[in-house]
Length: 286
Image (cartoon, rainbow, N blue to C red; front, side, top):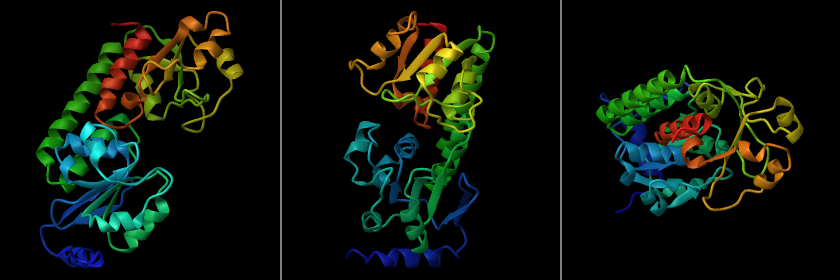
């Protein structure tokens, strides 16, 4: 018999006082405690869904967010929200043991209600590339996969350090990274993509902007004279309108290069592959 949604929450609150609880700090420093490794999981961001699949617990995810499409199995999971709205009722219906959410993902009101109801919530906001591994490790503990979490975190750290070493003596290139195929949004040096550019020994022409994702103008880009323009383009085969727009400026068509946002925009393990692609684009490696 399926229990009313409120019953699992009450049981969870009672169990939290028992010994043997799992307790971690989330990325914002909040304590997250559950009585046993989570079996029913709700993941409210595509990159968190990816990390859970990396840990081998994708089959435990009962609800996820729109655009959670990697790996392919993620597409079969019921969608309970997106970056703009989340259905509290749909989440409660899944009776989750833990909810993983992106702290800047836009579902704050729904998360506050779920927290009031007693659902444990892990808030993610990796501030650094190495922090992706720390997030992964905390998630691994909450789902009972600490050993694989350690292996994956150590592998991530090793690969990052290897890339830093490989490119530290390469010539510094001036780069403009355009994170949208529609508008001129870019990143500063603190954004994860900005940190990825530093790994590649590239100079981000908007590194010193005060906000992580500033909207800039064509004139401000041209005045900084980037030697390379990398555009995050979502679909292979589509011709970006920026081919024509940048091509209108002498010599700029030859500066354009493209990268799949699925690799470079999601703070998951795929981002390592994305950074490798980014470095090869900048330094013209094959």
